[in-house]
Image 1: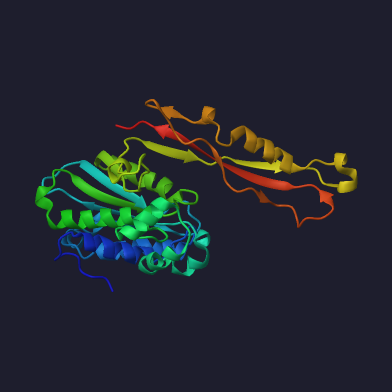
Image 2: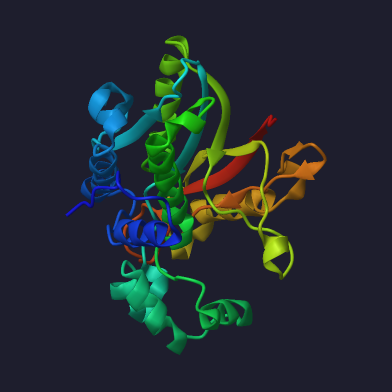
Length: 317
């Protein structure tokens, strides 16, 4: 049951409670029902606010264009008391990766409190154990990446909606699915943002509430804020071999040879990393290779596919 947020003020425990609720929804991408469940939960929560009861058109739950799974994105706009086109957007994705890496604790991964209590029995880096023993950290799938950011943005928007007199610009949240997979959520959101811009909004800034990785050991060093953005492209390589019996090896060609050389050429090469403002971005990295040939036999063949992740910068403020 959703609690009415209108009568409350923003407190850390509010963010924590919302975070636990969001983590409890196993929105592993791609999973249409569970990814929809997150944005619908947030839509229903925000619908309690008077500004959205008076202007329901500012609370938009929209299908992601081009998504065959029928997933949805959420855009919610709190308008300043004085009419203005200026708008600040807080954004994030609501999907997560799977929990296989959690091993025997996988059944607890979507219960952050239980997972945090149980993970102390597992091996972990010394820095992670210090965090765990401090009592100031939660562990669990999606806690950091990135439902905490979604919870913070949602709670901030609720607080601003309750106290709009302080606003000098409009403030919005944009939550999308499928970031961990094909980025269909953000690709669809770009079309929405362009349409809203054509209708009169002027974007001052977009704040990505995803966590960042700083350099150093102290919280002051790790608490980094970055300007600009890094995108990604996902080229796919389909490598085709020629089937032959192992006894006639040189009559065929193993496609694994192509994928191996492709990996050697592209994987982690700093020369292929884009640069902006004197900084190098993440180099290319290979996603898993998938063999499309039948089960292994005495045939040297292989039809394999290889996906390579590349990123490119876009100018920041």
